[in-house]
Length: 336
Length: 103
Image (cartoon, rainbow over all chains, first blue to last red; front, top):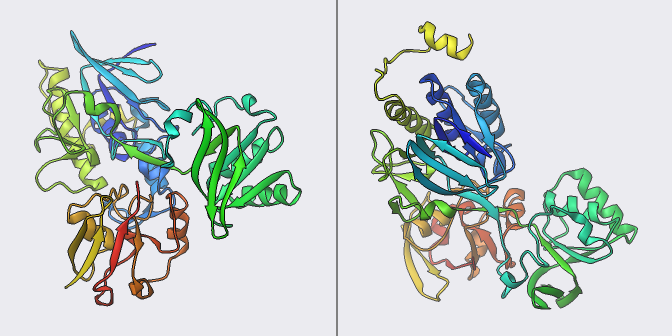
């Protein structure tokens, strides 16, 4: 599918969202791409319930509240979201850039803004020897089609919501063993009690321990080995589903030919532009002398970046600086 | 000012100056050792996982629910596992020996 817009923003965290606002005030429309299945980046994924105390004018605001408010603030500008997909590659085209996502969505724009935080969220992979061989054959980090698990021996590892939800879900169609390092779970209380009930009724097995080794051949799992205080044990397994949360990595952006400093993107502090003109980087992903990884700094960076995007998109137009308090033109855009 | 000893994943031992008020994660990160600390220290990831190797472990604040839950996302968790961001250095920890957990 091909889309056209003014600015592509990579990353739908707080800074990417606020960029929609600042770009919107300058008549620039945005599409956002994010690898997570939801909007909000780290705020929603890592700390939705944790309070933040250094957002100007909010003595205290929860991670998720901040995102909900930003979504309300940018609503008039009708941003388009492409979630659950990674920004894979970019190609120079006549009038700017063509970006292709991992779901083969193609978006054309004049400017690209990388607001990717600490990178994209990917599943945390257990550091087990030879795990690559089994991945996507008999080890899965996400489940698209559960029918293949029917009547199979499944080992689910982890103690969070994903681990418990899938344990409870697959219990009716498969032989499920849940393995976790302790008997406490950081999951919704309902899921925990359902799982304990299933265990009590012998509908699932629970093992206390941590995975140490995989046994199998040609990508087909046979057994998983675990250890706990009593020693070492084995569980027969056709499939292993590890749920150890997500981690962040820079991903394909590293190959876009932009100057990097370790895993950060170098920008100037006037326009927050990268070494490639019309590609910008704002928020935690960028670096410059004196950089602080704060949401509020990202907001400032987004604001200055937007000014430069305007001049790229409308080279013949003069950008008249106006305040939202008084400008009738801005009020119209905001629908107030 | 005190010193902590940190063993990296290649077995190298580093003596790091430790100041009151910094967390163990910050001391290790600021010394340039390979500790990811993806979330920056708000106990929202488990990438500053360390093992406390000597009896200084008794001087540490007790592990709380938040930290214990985050350790569920770490691997090779042992009895002496901690998240570096949740330990604020105090003088009593002078001489503490740590090992970085595998990544």
